[in-house]
Image (cartoon, rainbow, N blue to C red; front, side):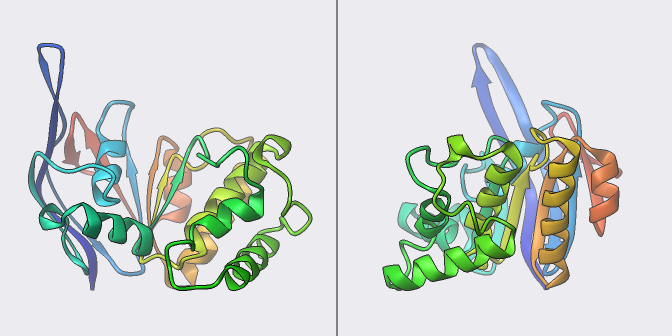
Length: 224
């Protein structure tokens, strides 16, 4: 069962007098439970494609269909609901809120649901503990290592049990041991039936984790 279907997807934008075709006619179907990696050089359009799938950007043309409907036809409120309830997002730069603790960062992902605060805190603490951060719940990001920050970011994305987890260079800023730990979390979550779409420069990592790898070059999907 597809969780994302892209049809002739395009995202163009102007840089001065130049038209940049970041995504240029992509057709792609992602199945439920799949681990898909998108690889390519910097500037190939892979992160732009991920942002389109995650509802962080809108296409210039083409169609993205998800179980909730067509992203192109959603209004701002519907798109916000899609981002809040259907997808999880992990970035290379972690994007944690500096003044909130690890626990507070994860709990915030559940804020817009119907769950009370005590239940949100309980679920967040349990997940962080499972990811090896039980003794770091009340530390702010500045007091955590890069690997710990990325595990907090993963917990924030996973705590709402998203239909799709999008990971944009999730190991790009990490040392080898931390990168391996993050890779294991992604692999385990996928093994439990979660769908993962990962953007990475690391072809070896993609090969180890993915069911399928596709390659982008100058905005177009080419043979993996």
